[in-house]
Image (tube, rainbow, N blue to C red):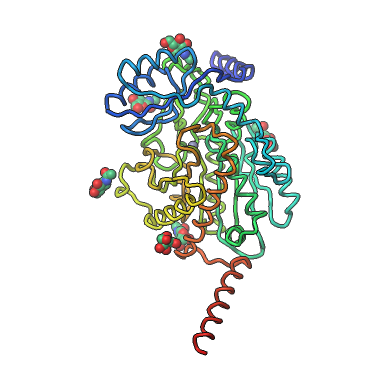
Length: 464
Ligand SMILES: *[C@@H]1O[C@H](CO)[C@@H](O)[C@H](O)[C@H]1NC(C)=O
Ligand SMILES: *[C@@H]1O[C@H](CO)[C@@H](O)[C@H](O)[C@H]1NC(C)=O
Ligand SMILES: *[C@@H]1O[C@H](CO)[C@@H](O)[C@H](O)[C@H]1NC(C)=O
Ligand SMILES: *[C@@H]1O[C@H](CO)[C@@H](O)[C@H](O)[C@H]1NC(C)=O
Ligand SMILES: *[C@@H]1O[C@H](CO)[C@@H](O)[C@H](O)[C@H]1NC(C)=O
Ligand SMILES: *[C@@H]1O[C@H](CO)[C@@H](O)[C@H](O)[C@H]1NC(C)=O
Ligand SMILES: [Zn+2]
């Protein structure tokens, strides 16, 4: 055994015995930099690693969220106050909010469950996998289990295919959740969409469920997701040890280097912008394009689906900020490289988010990444658009706008899911109106025949 192997094994055993990280007394602060000078002060705080920022980049007048451990709160507040920067405390004790995410809300008037699963709290990977098994058992002619591939730690990346009337050819749609481990609301939203497709009586939901072959993967980063339950609630990346190194220079724990940001690792504009080559950061793009087994699994799966059918939708669910992001994300100005159907993507997203806002008034913004977030290369939904030829490809950032961020309370799971379902229904209607696919199933036939009958009745009346 050479020294490197020894260090590697040592690192692994340290990982194994590492305790779950406590966020007792951590505070979440909000700062809105008003000037370039204030942006610089935030950058200093970031570079000194006095805070863990939930934003990758800072802009004047854009909200910034930072998580600060108890020992550094005075330093950070002092630094900001000294420079005249206003700061407010959004979460007083982060660990309490994390605990709440795992505590089911007990309100019988709004209880929800479907088989062994519910949306009263966030659930771990075991609960999700058990539920996927139940779906296959309960809906044998509609739901089939599918394996996308295996993670770094050799967990199975599991999903289901929902196909009503499998004998009929239909276009495909792919939904991916939890590419980023800590974005738990994405897991809860994707599982809800599955429930709706299987149980809803709404005819628009039925049409959407039945006219397409749905490939749905609630957790495409299973290692990272498990790690958010067992070790560190704030973990984002996968759990690859391949770039393990000392992170002393970054003043973060060395464990930070055990992971690649999967949404920077795809082989589309890899490492060109908005990504890091330093494994001690949260946006580490990996040693090479598509280096990660999770990335390869998703890419190969998309290409396999594309062999057999047109991919109408590719939806990548994330949180937070409330955005519908359309391709492409590596440009700083949309005129540089618009998607071939850019205008349709904008119109569909605007109509969907307009519909979304009607239920609870929740506001989502629409645009390419450069317009609503920041430019980035190597993302899955851009790759799916470019190489999977997915007609309608979005990255959807779910609730909220940063009040709780990744720690969205369980009370908001169902409202988040209800409004996103409204958006998807409107998305599907707009997509059909624009002729992206022709509905064929009974669910939609009935709407069309109803329309024909109505027309017939009208014309009979007219000619009487
Ligand atoms: C990974 O898991 C699968 C079954 O889930 C097994 O067949 C395979 O041998 C495992 N591979 C490794 C490297 O452990
Ligand atoms: C970061 O630096 C401070 C001193 O500047 C030190 O006390 C702390 O232990 C360092 N944190 C990590 C995770 O290395
Ligand atoms: C990483 O990127 C920095 C600039 O962001 C560059 O200076 C450095 O050479 C790069 N390191 C490697 C190993 O590519
Ligand atoms: C994008 O480029 C176009 C054409 O060069 C220009 O008119 C527009 O102002 C640019 N938009 C932004 C936000 O820079
Ligand atoms: C991409 O999809 C469109 C619409 O489904 C189809 O017309 C076109 O032929 C596809 N292009 C490629 C390169 O597969
Ligand atoms: C989007 O909404 C506008 C305004 O309601 C409507 O005129 C338009 O037809 C809708 N677009 C699609 C593609 O459904
Ligand atoms: Zn994300």
